Amino acid sequence: MEVGKVFNPEEWGVSDEDQKIIELITQLESERKRLKMTQKEVADLSGITQGQLSRIENLESLPSFGTINKIARALNKELILS
Image 1 (tube, rainbow, N blue to C red):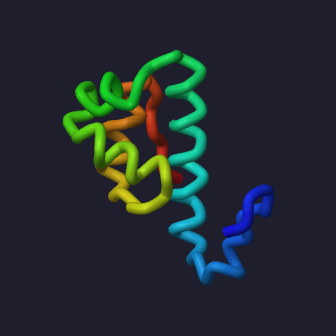
Image 2: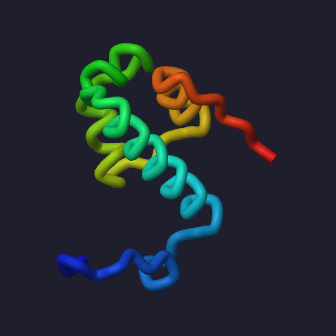
């Protein structure tokens, strides 16, 4: 993807479900940074590795909702699915 180019899910063939996961990941990463927490701190609290969290935040790996929930809990957030 070109620098400065806006992510277009349709261009990449991203499903609606994956797009929602990507939005959640982006929100959780923003919250982690707002709280000035390192990936290592959040990973330790989530029970995952820092490498796994890095791959998730870089959208190299799409996690299950269970893993997203663990990350959210580490950030004192509640994941509510509707």
